[in-house]
Length: 367
Image (tube, rainbow, N blue to C red; front, top):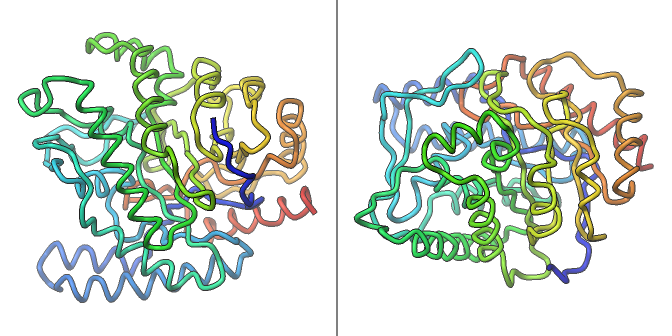
């Protein structure tokens, strides 16, 4: 397990994605219609990212993100930038409760590697805007390429070789982001939430997948990817149950994977969804067995604009201390506000009010 010294905990944090502004949406539409070129699109994205970074600072957030403003998806944009991976229009989207995404998908068509990825420049711009604040960057977990990708058996007839190459590609990614100045990287992962859901595990079995085997391989792959990282490189994971246009996919508490993720994953912290009863209770947190592992409680929902009762949130934080000391806890929304460019069903003002709410509650709890 990690022997790293305890890293700074941002008591008020957020998962990363923000509602795309109307200027960005309009620019991306014009770009798709060849009405503007890539340089003009980038200029508009730069301006809007600079604006939202300043807004995050004004709200009192210490770690700021670019809102994923240059992405269409929280995961596909990064994964398509890996050597050996291609994106394509599949004809079928990802099915959420009552809604379905666009038909984007990915496939592994060559040997995996990480080379000159465009998101390195995205991070460098964010870091330049962050100033004396921490520039936090988000990428999908290694698990997501296997979980969401179609793997050509002619390229990878041996699963073990695939996972070894995947871990090595991500290890190179970690090194590249660190060398670019990144000190706070978040891995986003829906696979672990699916592995908590009886319904989703049954669907996996119907596809010939073994959930217990996936737990083992995902754990091994992530740990290999983050192994031997510098002592000042903070890596966290957000475990998500689905977030598209304010809808969701999976249900189930963390108990089925709690021992593995809290006891064996060699990362620095977890962002956990706790905004609804679909996430279960805090009891699985009893498996947190390290005093350098922090837990960010996602008690504020990003799915609608109504503000939660402060006293109720404080009460739930207190309940969590039955299993994890208060000094190892923090607060955030349960997910981002726009896992895809379409965004959740609330206004930008409501989004900022949610983040302000997180900051205010955190100051009152950890003052």
